[in-house]
Length: 305
Image (cartoon, rainbow, N blue to C red; front, side):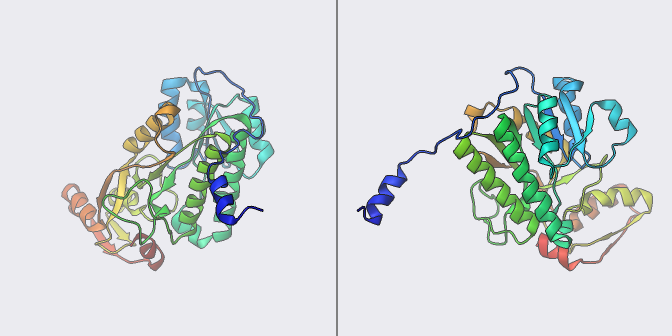
């Protein structure tokens, strides 16, 4: 009979059995065939356009569960894809010979706190479907994480790629779950999983979808539309941000990187940090008549502290 210490020493050196289930290859190593879920959100359209310019219009399929604007359908393929419907996803991958999957579907931080069960369903169960689909068909999978996956005790300036993560929102918790499950599927099955932790993304063409940093986008639209804006954070709440062009460029570089060049599966992506007060000062240099009030939302402030 083995003592626990001896058994532990044997277990320590066991290697994972990869590809326990046979993955089905549907493609060669040429031009990727890309499916983007949650494609009508803040990032999907921009990434699709960049990838279509590079890989060809017909090789990048945008998808969502809502109807696409007519002008979006003219830019390239768009289909309905429900991440909670595994058979629907399976048919899309098989029928379109998908080789890369970019998974943007998620319920973000502030919205998630108001809809915890829905966030669990979309962010956790939805990702279970995605990661298993990618394992089954041997796809390259990119799913973004977030600075919300950290927590109050996470080291700052700089935050390491591998660090303490104790998030305080269901969005952050679900993204830590996503990171760990993706890494596990890479360890267990050899899945080509990649992720980047996004800061708040600043964009113009597409509105953000309920995150804590949304004010840094809305302020420009409201400044031009009404000349006034209410900010839901304290003036001194400093948070990391990134311009959408830089975010998309970093995403594509990570997606295209040869797998043998990756040192890990999850990376931080850096931009710039500023406070609402600093942003207002800069906007008022261009629009001096802009009137700003601070009406602190306790929920968003607790997330952004």
